[in-house]
Length: 122
Figure (cartoon, rainbow, N blue to C red):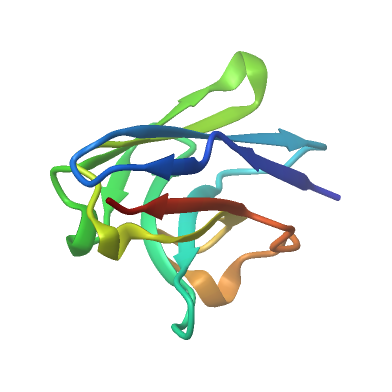
């Protein structure tokens, strides 16, 4: 089984930055895609960014040029550097892996857990 714990969220002003961390426990066998997802109040959960086992990355159009996903394999940790934050980025952020491809929210196989709140407000 895989447990994922997100951290690093909080309250930030528009234009500011945050760095989210996702620490994974347990093992995932074979190639996979780790993704960041978010869910805003009253909205469906959506894909934000992903990174594959080979290091390839992908961003949703909504965060292109502003967010950067990266990994530290030695710490079993995935990061999301969030710059130029906008109030529209306010959401609960989650990480989750899948074996299919980038942005495959329907194919994630870990529990969503509690996520981490990001609030962008003046």
